[in-house]
Image (cartoon, rainbow, N blue to C red; front, side, top):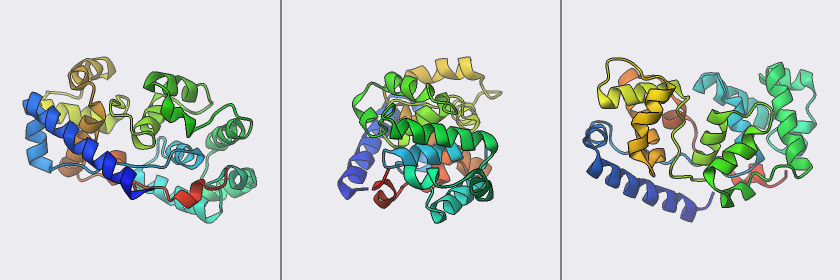
Length: 229
């Protein structure tokens, strides 16, 4: 991860938050309460996509522990992952389903079906479509990759329960909005919904004291993990 890239992401996030808070009093109030979030940055590539898949439907702490064991087993590259049999992946903490998904991802990178780094040049919805064509990658995974790895400024992973609870908190709603309502409510924050999402994850973390992806997961995958696919 280059310092230039980190600086660009930080500058873009700061500018987006300034515009959002200027246009939306609720966002301004949250920003005053919790302060600005940090950008969440992953290096585009196989390792980051696999890392996000590891985080599906498990706690932040569990995902971090599984990922650390996978890195220790050299399974964070395509060749390294494919060298691990089911028994080894089970010891790392992979379910049978995630073993299948990880292998499908590795195979798609190997055969050229998917170029995770090259997705950066495509429109956001096309990125999501290409990723969601793979087994085990749904909307949430695709959108987290777009936000953290590709730096897409207009992503709001509406399926994330913590984010929808953050919407409830920020807008002082009586109950957490469902998917359709939350989608409508967050339309107003286009085209800078990624900044709003990071801020609301931070709000949820501050009020609930519970670790969440957008506020607590380690933000950077070392470039060395991407050197060999």
